[in-house]
Amino acid sequence: MSDIAFAARELVDGLMARPWGQMTASVYETGRLVTLTPWLAGHAERVDYLLRTQRPDGTWGAPDGYDLVPTLSAVEALLSEHRRSGRAELSAAADRGVEVLRVRLRAAADLPDLPAIELIVPSLVSLINEHLDGASDALPLPSGMNHDLLEAVRGRAASGAELPEKLLHALEIVGPAARGAHVRPTAIGTIGASPAATAAWLAASRSAPAGLQPAEAGTRGTDIHGNASASNVGNAGAGNAAAGHAVVEYAAIGHAGFGAAGRSGDRVSGDRGPVGDVLAVQHLEAVARRHGGPVPVGLPITVFERGWVLSWLTRAGIELDVPPEMVADLRAAIGPAGTPAGTGLPADADTTSVALYALALLGAPQQPDSLLAFDAGTHFCTWQGEDGHSLSVNAHVLDAFGKYVECRPEAEGRYRPAMARLARWLQDRQRPDGGWEDRWHASPYYATAACALALDEYGGPEAKDAVLAAVTWVLDTQREDGSWGRWQGSPEETAYALQVLLQTSAGVDPRLPEAAAAGYVFLRDADLDDQPALWHDKDLYTPQAVVRAAVLAALHVAERDRRVAGLVRS
Image (tube, rainbow, N blue to C red; front, top):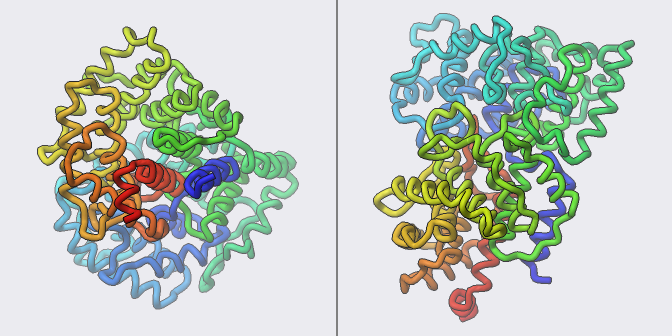
């Protein structure tokens, strides 16, 4: 077995061992827990994480506007913690952040297309201004942004009306009303697959759950070893037998596969009373322990992670021994309305299409009619009511339809018209330079790989020029060290570039073999832990298993290419 095949097998085995998924920590999400649940295990580590990750210029996060949301969250969290503890270093770090925010907010114009940014920014600006206590130079909102939408959402939540399911992922923006609106934890204790949303739901009761007391003023709070917090969870609601059973139930769920719980519609399956509180606390503490205190922007991501990992590896031709229960779980997760990325999220066309594509690649094709619910006429929406559109989502839908028709030729008449429409739509949105860009990823190399591979396989001869233009753009943008990347050369983006070069049939440019060989050498020697977060959520994140699968896939196709292998050996 080759090193790549062995690594791929280990990666797939890891999906079963850690069914909630593997995600990097989020400054935004961690900051919200510092403010909302200071009594939760790992509080001191979360505070230290915020101090440790501040950049020399006073910000947190990536450039090009991606630093606004994490910086707002971190500053507000440090101001909240300073109010509780009085630690001077917290005030100093927050002051540096406030000063840079005064400049960034006034200059902010074309902000990144991040989920709920139009709600999160006004919410955090208001909270910080409350800390500043009437300072003459209060933080402004970016041009074109106001509080109207935020107040409308808060009013709806306060009325007890049901909120759109996709909004639960950012429930923290509604403040004390988070406890209403028919919101309750799922069976595994999460609200909206978001630690921040779950913490907001707990904090909206205005007190820690029974048996969990806030850290005393002047202390640094609880630690990740469970002192003053984790050890008390089992006593939550002392005398409440139901709460005790909930802890046992949670422990079982936390180590199980997602099964039917991976479907959408689970948001009312939990409990709004003491049992729900205990489940939510247990969920947050489990997530925090996994990351040493800080938390990611979303978890679980079970279906998303498995779909992407299996499709990247299998598409590249890596032979896998996929556990049959993983295939069965993936099939079970796809209902008539599709599947969400994980428990607590709404069904979406992206996860549904990638899961369907992975199943077809694995020889278990499933009819993709669930995707038809996302058909917006000209294109496919990520979810119902989406504001905007995603090119990578539509490329993945094209993959799902195309692979199913390949497996079931008799279905061509049903899906071919949609495939032709999608291919034209994607070509019409290609940039003049040959690349594509997308709302779910900061790097154009991700969108370009998704679109170029889908069009090459299922776009027909009319898409040949678009794929050729994509290959040319990739070749034109390679860095001197053989890598590719938006802000710096990164393993993830280099993997996407190599897939465009080596997994499409438009590779006739004479520069291609040497470029691919240089990219392979960079990727082979790269440190996968040293690269920027690029995936869009409330904050940028890295789905670590997904990115590792993309890298292994690229290495595999490069090693199988005789032109590239020959150059590397020489």
